[in-house]
Image 1 (cartoon, helix red, strand yellow):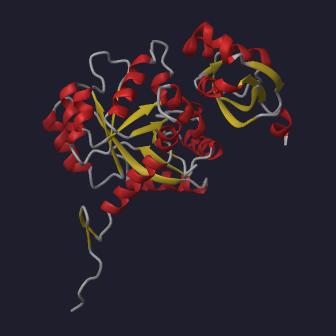
Image 2 (cartoon, chains in turn red, orange; image 1 turned 45 degrees about the vertical axis):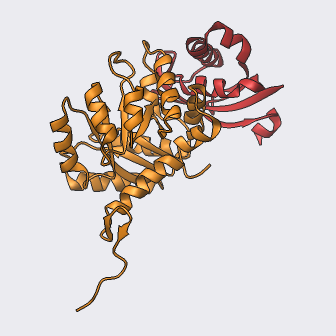
Length: 99
Length: 233
């Protein structure tokens, strides 16, 4: 079972952030606070990234959603610019996130 | 969730753009009220305009002071001076003796520790006498050299002694703001249960603020005593 997160990214210098840069930052945050075992048990996966709206949909293991939410909150910068990643919604299906 | 409150926002008062951005971010993150740490020498007009700026975004504002001093006498002097001026009084415990005094004093609402300082932490002796709530600031967790063991241990001790835990962002820039749900998720990762984590960003900060607003009202005499009706003539 998976949980899906809708995440909105705010950046200080308004440069467009790519999906790769975001998932790199997320994985390094998970690795920093929960370790390699955390990465494999939380299993974060970027499903969609909209660079125009700066929104991402990320999936993780259902039982580890708190850890992923904490890791998202602890992202401080992406590609060298100060960033805030806010969780907008968490759901059991991607469809309900889009609505 | 009960109305979410962030009790530790440190705005850059001289930077108007940053203040506006902070207010917008707080609104989009879902906060209903915040406590702003304001410098003690700030002009009243400046404070009023800051309040208006946040009120325009639909966020209720409370004034907070962070007291950081080295000894007991200084702390007591500052508490006498500022308790009736600010809505929230917080003490940054820079040493163990000060932590004990601050935790015991009923004028102190919140105590917090610097996780990077290894010689001072929230231990059993402080927790045992604590009337104040323990605050955990998200901003301190951003540091590169932080280990989560220290805040985890502090939360464990607070839970054992039934000390209230407040989760705040401690942000100095808009990019350090996180949603109340994210703060409570961090609380849960650090060892709080679901209810404690949720209360840490809503019920507990509200109760602190409401109690102090009541204390500062004209009807308040002392704990449990209020003026109900005044005799005329």
